[in-house]
Structure formats: structure tokens, C-alpha cells
Length: 166
Image (cartoon, rainbow, N blue to C red; front, side, top):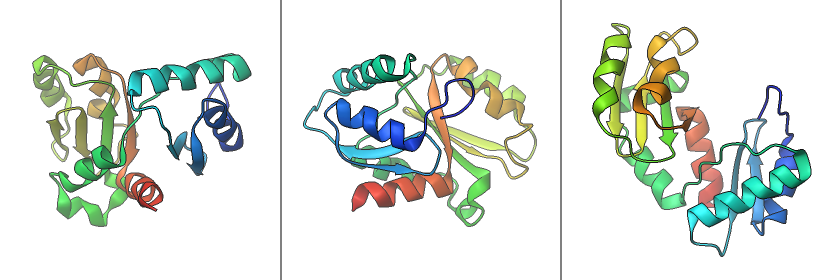
């Protein structure tokens, strides 16, 4: 987590632990963490985490929670397996909810010739061989779909899955 609301991974882990999350492990300075929780309701747990961050840090970031099974399913469903060898070009945007299909046409109009994307439920897959830094498509995903999310490259997704599976 960066920008104006800085939060170290040590602080993130402490916030998660104060929200009754256990076995917390963080992944680099990325805002990603894996943990165990007895709370099975994702909405309740998300609000508990946001509340803990507001109480300790004064801001409440967006929280997207995934089960190990959901992460495994997203990895297995990758529609661009040939892009896995260039993990910085393959991105998964984990959306907060399943969007309607209305924004997909707008996204198709923004994509560069080299870019490909697939919306599969609440996961938006993007293969951007030229990178996402200047990609109009990557910048507009959440706005066009009307759903917030968190985008991670293939390497990060795989590392988080490895952490969560152990």
C-alpha cells in the first residue's frame, strides 16, 4: 500500500491480527497478505479489517478478500496460458463483485492491438505484452465495469497462491 496512505507490511499484519486474523503472512510491499480466519462471512471480515485500519491508521482502504479456492480457480482459469512465461505482461484484476457486461464493449474500444482481455465472473484477465503503464484499457477497467478491484501481475498472483497453500 503506497501513495498518501502509507502502510508498511508490518503495520498491515498488525491490523489484520487485531481483526482476529491468524497466521498472517505478507508479500513484499504490495498490500497483499494471506491469513486464516474463523469468520466465514467475507463482508463481515472485510469491514472488521477496514475498521481496524481506521482505528490504528486513520484511513480505511478497499479490501478484496479471496479464499484459497477462489485464487486457485482464477489461476486455473487463466485464458492466456502462453503469457505465463512473461508474468509481468499478464494481469488479473480481482473485482469486488461480478460486474454486468455493459462495460465490456467500452473496454474493447480502448484496447491496443496487442492487448487481450477476458472477463470471467469477478476476475478480469488482461494480457498486455507492451505493459500496463500506458495502457488505456488497464487504466479504465474499474471505471468501465463499474466495480472496484485490485490488479496483480501473474508472478504476484502465483506467489500469493503459494503462500496461501502452505
